[in-house]
Amino acid sequence: MSVITRQAQQEIAGEKLTGRVAFVTGGTRGIGRAIALSLASQGATVAAGYGQNEERAKAFMAEIEETGATASIHQGNVGSAEDCRRSVAEVIDRHGHLDILVNNAGITADRPVLKMSEEDWYKVLAVNLSGAFFTSKVALEHMLERGTGRIVNISSIIGQTGNIGQANYAASKSGLFGLTMTMAREAAHALAKAGKLTEDSLNVTVNAVAPGFIETEMVETVPEKVIEKLRLQIPLSRLGRPEEVARVVHFLCADASSYITGQVWAVNGGMEM
Ligand SMILES: NC(=O)c1ccc[n+]([C@@H]2O[C@H](COP(=O)([O-])OP(=O)(O)OC[C@H]3O[C@@H](n4cnc5c(N)ncnc54)[C@H](OP(=O)(O)O)[C@@H]3O)[C@@H](O)[C@H]2O)c1
Image 1 (cartoon, rainbow, N blue to C red):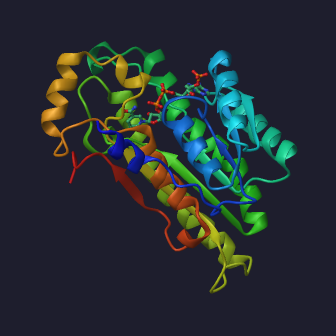
Image 2 (cartoon, protein in one colour):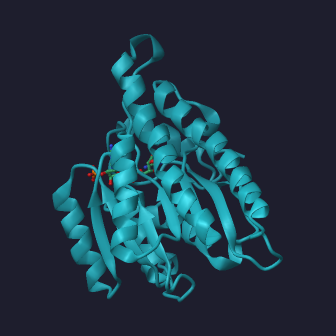
């Protein structure tokens, strides 16, 4: 790729999110890292969650601090409801409040349905879907009290199309669509009931982003032959970059996006249309 194209992809620093606190689960590498950096580039204080990889979390902290942003890292298994509640409480304790939650942490455990174990099924559902539910539940309560907030759920094109060998992953990512729309409706309803839904309020919005195939470690496990076949199905003829997902997330988190809720935003090079 040419240098000019790379430069064009870089975020232009701004102040859209100054004063905002954002919690990004799985925020220390891959798509989550790009989201965290992108939110920070707009002035947000960023709390990045991670599961096990402490080395990567520390490297992320060093990287983000170099930009001058305020940040923190939080260990927790999003597959555990208890850890989800504790992590959100930890972020609020540390930074005073929470404006933005990005449910990004996710895993795969691929097998055809007939070979998928009970453990593989429940593990993926627990991290990808239940994790978003339990983390959002505490964050939403806090946001509704404050009358403003943004929740963005990172789903996947696989939730829209299904995929051979990914019944657990596809079900978890489709599940995020239903969760997103329901939370968007409930948030608006609760704000209206509390008299907080005024003409110019910032609102509590809930949206989903559905990336296509993005160059991260998650995709590194896919054999090159499969990637080649995938490329042929992508009108824009390449995999996406984490930054290309991140820019949609920071757009949705801006105050000016207060009229966008309950939607699915695809970032997939035209693979699904
Ligand atoms: N890459 C793609 O092509 C693609 C496409 C569509 C959607 N997505 C979705 O985008 C999200 C990020 O994907 P990615 O490609 O960036 O993945 P990745 O590179 O594998 O990173 C996953 C992140 O999630 C964290 N995580 C995993 N399990 C966790 C757990 N149980 N508790 C807490 N954190 C946990 C990891 O923490 P550690 O560093 O501690 O392991 C890591 O930070 C996922 O939800 C994925 O499904 C990805």
